[in-house]
Length: 116
Image (cartoon, rainbow, N blue to C red; front, side):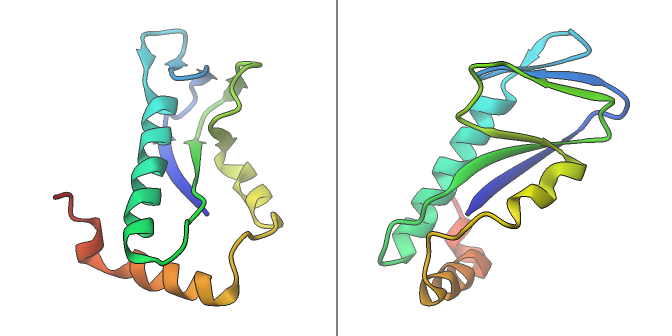
């Protein structure tokens, strides 16, 4: 399962490091760190309502960028341009069909996502 976080920066040059991203060489934004934190939150919520551990990987998808560069050490968050998202499709699953159905039911339940 992937927690996908999208960022739109039309025509920009984007560099993504271990925790930060720079747009057109400007100030750093904590996109990678935030994406990892969001995946952790998704994992906790789904784990609270499912009777098994749900593996959740963080993914950052940049929309409309002119170029995307990844630091050689960036391997904790998957980083893609929007046209590369299809690469996630053929990846093999880690959940059974029954587990997928349970995750789907929990993920669609609005109250599960309320922070308490």
